[in-house]
Each structure stands twice: as structure tokens, then as C-alpha cells.
Image (cartoon, rainbow, N blue to C red):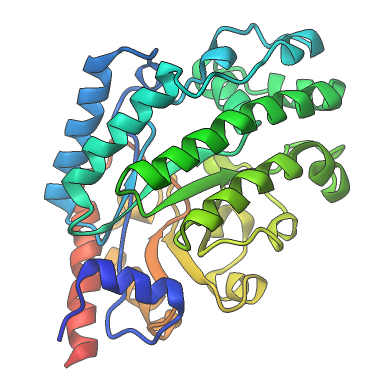
Length: 340
């Protein structure tokens, strides 16, 4: 008897032996600048909803990771020049009834109504200081300033993280109590600087990251920690061994830490991943036979326990739904064979 998709993913989180392995992939649905829409941009929000809906109908994933397109720009971060310590100190938390929070909650109510009766839903949430990095790297296309700020103004960055953390906790609390969201997909990343060893990272960044994660875990056991290696940013995964989550997802191919090695790092936990998400890799360029063979190998390696087949991070927006459907269908076929 085939499990429902929701039950199947719960089994993966709990570590039960499965007869099937769930699969799920995701990418953004708005152009990069539109992802940073201001509150009140109903058209951008509706385009994001339609993009998710089309993806779900065509790919038929076993989980639905909902992207925070149209809400990636935190208002006080977007309005700030982010040049120096004074600018970081100017970052302040919002009120609980700020449109950036209230509209996001209403947006997720609409999204989860579409999918939550069929699959478990997870929402993309950046850890506090990552909202600053994302603005600089993906809106300004400035790939050096975040590290400059982190190295030269660590205490000011810590202040900004505390202020942003207040809003992220408010948002997480509302999302997990007022919508049908099952959990968050929580994005963290090492500061890409040798000055940020594990001790410094924990002091300046980690405390506020962990506060958000602790709250999420109090409200749901189904939270995913994503250690982001997007665009080949490297991370020391040891930084996150004490970050408690229901499942873990990291850049297997960028970090050079295999799925089996990660299982030892996060023992007894559900692992999400397998495919390299970057352009010009198997997932975008491989023929169907090779793609399916890789998927089958990942499934076999998992021994049908504590595993969700996916990718290191968001796959390219340009990838066809058909290619992602190949992998999902392959997993489902493999699952049927296992259950016979």
C-alpha cells in the first residue's frame, strides 16, 4: 500500500523504514529584482502564486518548498545604503502589524491552501544577517560588501542581526500558528571570511540564528536546516552540528561532503539532497538515462530511511519542469519496485 505524500515525508523525518523515498526540488518564480518587491505589490505576489501552482501541477513533487519571492527584501534593509557601521546600527525591527509581515502571512495562507492537503509545505526563511547578504549580492550585485561589513563592523553587524531576528521570530511564529505551513526551510551560511572562525561566528551571528531555530522547533518538528552553498560559497559544516532541525540540506557537491558523510555529521537525522543544483551539471545537462541512474543510486544509498531526494539548493530558474518530473517520476517508479 502506497503511503500518502504527507505521511511519507513524516516517515522520512522520523527515521522510519520506508517503502518509498520522497522527492522534491524548487527554484524561484520571479526575476531577481521582482523577488525584492515592496509590500503592497499584489501583482508580484500573484505571479509568485501562479508560478508555484504551475510547478506543482507539472512536476508533482512529494514536498512543496514555497519560495519567499516578492518578500526577499526586508524593508529596513532595502532602504539602507549599507556602507558602514552607522548604517548597520540604523537597522531596526518592524512592528508586528507591518505590511511586510502581515502580507507575508496572508500570502502563505493562500499558498498552503493550494498544497497542504496533498504534500507537506516548507517556507524559505533566511537567518537574520543573511537578509543583508542577500540584498547586497542579489539586488545590488555587490559580492564583496557583506564580507567587508562583517570584517570591519562585527558588533554593528551583530546589532543588525538582533533587530532582524526579532522580525524573523515574529514572522515564523505567525506562519507556524496562523497558516497551514508545516515547517520552515531555514537558510544559514558561513561568513566567507577567515576572520570568522567558529568562535567568532557563534558570537556575532550564531546566537540570533539559533533563537529563530529554537522558536521554529518549539512550534513544529518539521524544520529543515539549509546550509547554503549557492554559487559555490563554501561552508564548514561543523559550525552547524549543534543546530537542531528535523532535516538537513547542504551543498554536497560544493562542500565535497557526500550524503553518507553528512549522515555521520547529523546522525539519525533526515537528509535532503543528492543533485548538484548548479547550471551545466547533470540536472540541467544530463540525458535522461544518466539523470535517472544518479537518482536511483541516491535512493539505494539511503536504504530507504531518513532521506528526501532533492538538490543542494535552488535549481536554475530556467530548468524545464519536464526534467524535474523525470527525477520525481523515476523515484516513484523505484518506489513501486521497492514495494512489490
